[in-house]
Image (cartoon, rainbow, N blue to C red):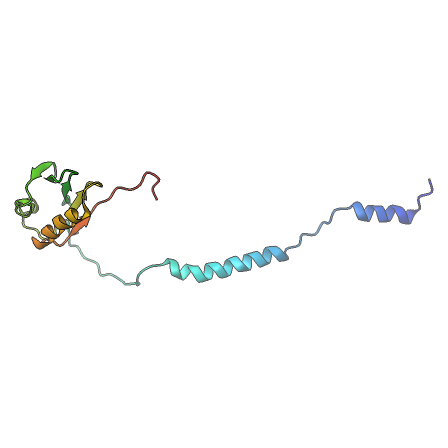
Length: 144
């Protein structure tokens, strides 16, 4: 049995877990994150800060539904759900938009149609005086 008192104290010190937490790595990580956020936060705001004036006027084009021009894979044109000939397209667009040149017009082209044909129809619409013409595309199934 001859264990001395100094041997027992030495064993206890070796087996006792360290009760102090080393916070230096935590502080280092937090400082790096702080610097990253300080650098990137100004970049996340876009635009110029402007104090806009207040008005009681009604918003423009809130109740107008956009007009859709569709081009099928065989080249047929549709204004909404109604077929239309290329020669009558602009005249019928003017009638549907009630001569509003800023009415929104969406052009939908089949994915198998020639891109030049879609651009020709868009050019015809803009040559007719319409200024808000947009090309629609479908979102991929994954959302990206």
